[in-house]
Length: 488
Image (cartoon, rainbow, N blue to C red; front, top):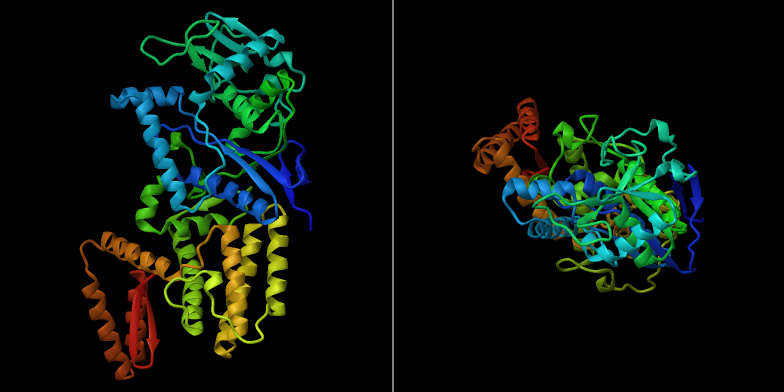
């Protein structure tokens, strides 16, 4: 099956055909670094990480560029509010973002340029846009003239007249058109600036990606990605700038959907953003990744504590099965596929080949990760059956399938005990925070009381205690007369 990806420009699923056979090029708009990463950043990063992983798994060499906007009005304002040097603050948040994405097991891009590293190249591009008649100078500012470009609005489907001012397009009565946007901004006293033909200033937000994508990937490249909120104005304006420079830019434009908090679109103006560092205190990073993979990347996703708990339970089931398979196959510690023991007459069982085919078909269909996870759970269920039947050859074959699925989805199935250890530690910390100084000793007492109820066959009381423990996020496992427990 040919890999199909939704193209925002054509509004259709499009066959992926790389410009250079065997080599894929991907540019993704990264964060403006004036704060720590939030769940919206996590969603975009995970979505395009799966795209990068699938391209590589499909046999393509990958040129993957994700930028950092390290100079912007928001950065200047935040640094001033905190009494910090803007550059040091931006560097600190770049480091923070990189750490968070590593926790989410996102691949490092091939290159991660900063806007301030390409000021001269942006100046060259702005000068050419002015020379080509698509921009005008106004008291040290340079504005793109959207009316000069007949194709403006193709990506977003907006007419120039309907384009709302604001949204990082400066409202300025002096502009020819409210939708005209800044290519270069004259600096105000005390602001960082660079020399230019129009006076000291700094680049506008939109020009940086037009310039850096061309410098690092060429005038034409395969895929340009970002959040749905970037379709307009950012990507529309990128496309306009590149057209004014005679550059075709991306063959496919693809965008991930919004994150809703309690069914409301996440936005900083509503004050309902969630810092991923705070989420990581309550759930392992892999749980957040699994949650994001459970929905199609283009659709909205509803974020809530209960949604993370549900993802937590599903992911734990997978890891418990993998851990059981390690014990069944005699694998010490956390093992990699190459370390799995061999068996006589070993080979991939037919079901494993079917799972691989269906999994690849799901991802080839516009990165249908929820469908891919469905095939993954089918493999987990079959692995449990094969272990029950004592079939080590089948168990090993299916374990390798799970490892390969995990690699493509960015889930570390080859490290079950490391995950379960962290899962338990974070669950304990969350329990302590939610129960106001209640300790695990209380749970031990409740479990002991339940065991007494079971021994006297008081099933009503035993079930009541199980339900009470479940409300505290405690999972019980009865093995004969003995009961163990863990946090969900």
